[in-house]
Length: 438
Length: 185
Image (cartoon, rainbow over all chains, first blue to last red; front, side):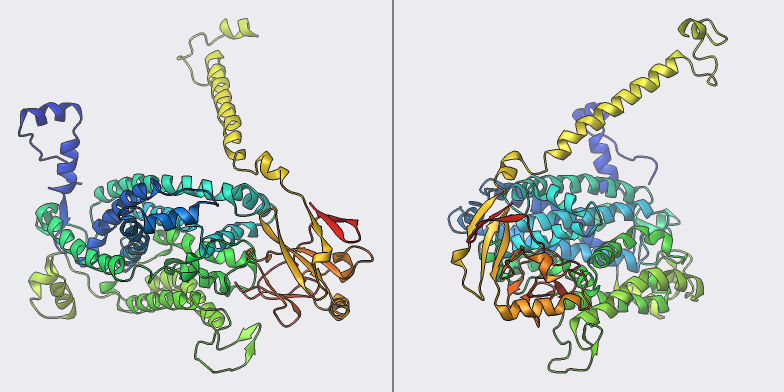
């Protein structure tokens, strides 16, 4: 972004290396002097947090693989052995299991940050799409990792998710048989899931490298959404954002440690402490919390293929969002009406997650029966998730394109510095900017 | 043909890009061969994930029907999946036949779902046709099965009656070896 490098090799070795592999120069330019907008708030610290999460998952995962046995007869016992006999095995496994939830928590904040501040808009479309690819890879990795302990939820989760692909006409059955390597989820399935679960994090790391590369071409977006106009709008990445990111990481690790040491099983299903039994499905089968909104969408459609298409479509919409959004204003700070729809959108995602955790027929308001509409009572989780799914789809397909054309945005500041300098301590914009000091 | 090109108006391959010459031909053939090689090599790497020979070899089982009481169901494992062997009561059979022409999502008569002369024996693959969970015996308002995952309801013929599943519970290939023994697969 800066165009020219200000790195000056200080020692003879650095000069020698710089002529041959300018890797110190690359690190210096991208992590030390990189000009970063001076108004980034704490929502921008989640990129660094996510890099840490990936690192934790890879390190703990490599260690767990030293003790885990990917075989239907031994997998469950080997995980129990990790928990009981392997030195600090309990700690490493709980870090890995809670780490997955922490990773998704951070990635959802990161994605919503990008949605709110318009970080997907030109010239950052490729950066955004790479992020969507990382998210998809994370979901695939998390799903396959969840199968490995070979508990009841592992097994039946694998059955349900692989059967999703069987919904496709003509080729569906061939695809599921191919994925399973047999006629059901069995030993061949477990083996290949282990292989891929080990591989994909490194693929994610590769795409993360591209993601950061694509970030460093246009540089960071910022809470105003206004482009960096001059050097006065930026500060060097180090020490300003290295310190800010480190502080956020410290706070995040407190939450992480809270789950690892106090509530390691809070986010795990008790049924997964029962060894997989292909002949009995648990009475109440749900995915991990980070998949619940999509699970609710799947169940909201009373048609198998339709449900699968809705679920995958909900993610596919993210990929094309840069071209769906007609607004030229990046930050929703200057789009008061759209901001309202956005906050409803967040609420709807949470509602979908809540619906996904319940049975379709469960009452939303307890002990109230209204009337049966179609297949279920109106006061049921399935009807609430239908309404929420419609809002989710409408947010991208109707609200986003229409609002960009019809709304009247607030005045946009001339530069990143202007809202702070010209309206000291007055006006909502200045107040908002002041509370999020960089 | 070869001498024609070599002695033609375009002896120098760099002189013109309009006429295809022997060098272009070599490029195209080499490229096509490389693509062909990659594609044919890709197939073994894709097909290795399909069921292996020993997995396919274990695909048949025999089952002794005397183990099942009337009105009961026994679940056995076949090809890694549950197989329902249900000994239906006359009442259950009558209910199934009665609904032969009801509004069915995946229309099938009860007669087509059992072997001739053996309406009491219903042999089905015990995975919900929605997403593969194992339906619960006797559940749901039709007395057949109820799937705990997403609420699909099957009748006493294993036909889908309600919920998200698109098809009836599948009938596997099986045959009666004797009055009390079946072979599945």
